[in-house]
Length: 343
Ligand code: SPD
Image 1 (spheres, rainbow, N blue to C red):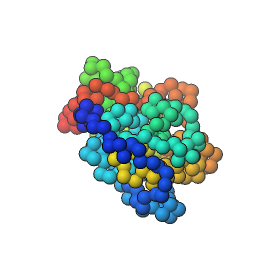
Image 2 (cartoon, rainbow, N blue to C red; image 1 turned 90 degrees about the horizontal axis):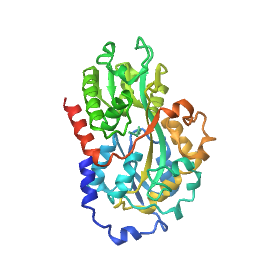
Image 3 (cartoon, rainbow, N blue to C red; image 1 turned 60 degrees about the horizontal axis):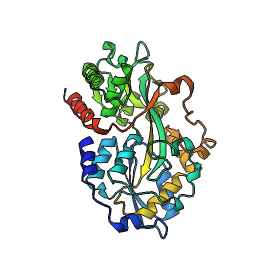
Image 4 (cartoon, rainbow, N blue to C red; image 1 turned 30 degrees about the vertical axis):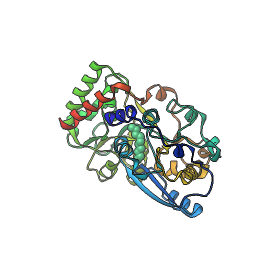
């Protein structure tokens, strides 16, 4: 992914004038194409939007930032809205892959919590609207482990051989191995990264697979006992199987915010803005956060939720770290991840 993005940044063409100037006001286009993470929206969000705005939505999903970026770089496949994680937002902006948001038609913007609007991914939200936040931790079946996991190192416990998965995401796998040894999830230190590579390869024989959101079904069936997984996806699985627990390893972990952005060539700019403003409604944001299990970034939504994810504080906050753009080290991380997958 780093190389793909790097080539965009260096070979950036200026966006055609009409793209930059197209007003977001005016009649909506009849169609909207959304590309979002799987299991990341409420059951009725799309159908209700279609009905109220008379716009047909084509809604596709992906499992990783890499998958989404590959499509974006290849021309975006005509998508109007995609959902990158925060560390990618500055890279996509710098690469000229996004178009600016028109705040004149985002009247519900003030519902967002300032904490998220002022985040370093895109201060003030020139290009990116905060969508949801979450954490990565260990989801486990308390009935299938002799001792509950407490550390990233427990992924390698011999008693769990073949009953463990890690996320299919180099930033997550290397990030967890770095945290295990007390380093930053954004390390660019060669020695630390080499050690994380060795640790990831040492844990690998214990793994059934690298799997992301799709591991939920295997946790529910009991085929997998421990999985590196995101907080919200774990909450979704817990609704089906109450013996699933979620814990943050004692060494700490990463916290992320995902955003909604408009690709540079998004053809349905007005409908895209209408959708963003719709998602900013407190009742819509509350329903999405409640059903997906992720943290609301919309302050006005929190009071409408039955069981909102509490914002981390105190000791928990001190062990959380946001992922950041790795800059020139992205290529090295990509090479290490390729080595881990092949090893
Ligand atoms: N099922 C939705 C998952 C969203 C996870 N996005 C964030 C990944 C951060 N590495």
